Length: 219
Image (cartoon, rainbow, N blue to C red):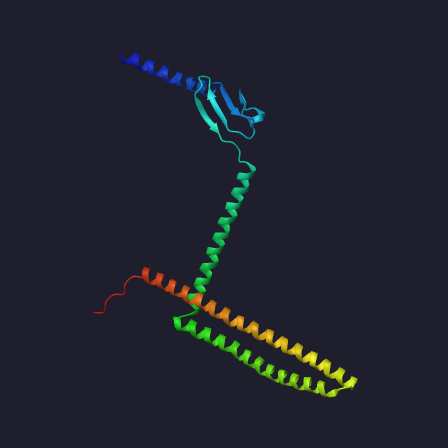
């Protein structure tokens, strides 16, 4: 009896690879739908289905596997857009980390930020004051030249010279006024910049304090 069972097992072992090979080589049918909605069946996927999903079936009609449709041009563009968005976000994160590290290494305490802010604003203010003093002189000179032009009367040569000087002075006044306006904007930019840095500094310090281990109590 035992000998008979062994013979059966050996025969089955020899037969199984044949079954597996037959199953692997068994004919399959490929089914796909083209862009017009028409179904195609055959040993190979129809050329019309180059952009469609293909279903591989056995002779019995059971699905063996599904070959996904290749991505459309729109899907490829969407993928590229997502990739670019992800890369841009990663680049922003790296840049923010660099700025945060620089911020923490530059300032020891909040007062350091306020000190640097006030010093830079004061430097710009001194430049504004210098331009304002120059403006006073230019405006006074312009007033004298305008009065002189009124007194020159029929002296055409003198009137022409004065007119040129008046035009030049007005141009200088406009240039200094423009420079002062730019410096005022610079001051406002400094206030906003350091307000943002102060806020970020506080956020970073708060995060660091929340993850730092508690200090051991003194004995």
